[in-house]
Image (cartoon, rainbow, N blue to C red):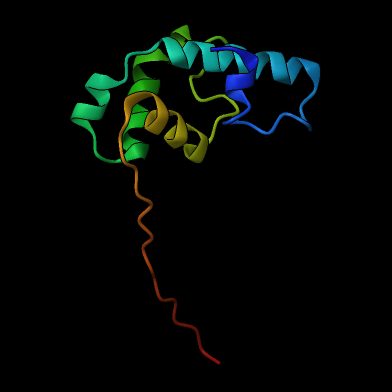
Length: 99
């Protein structure tokens, strides 16, 4: 992937040159992983990301796979590369307090 391809996932204007280099290097590492087995085994994005970290953190450029990459950016990557649908599910919780 070229630098311009990563701009779809990450807003670069605030990154230092080193952060930009690390982010691009990290995206290149992520792009090299075959996520098909993980997509087949997991339907929860967080669980998928944890499984990938368990398998690949030791090999990742900065020591962990999802360095500077959040769930939203990763979900866009998966949608674009693997043609999957990702839905955000919000859980509502009610907190009780005395007034």
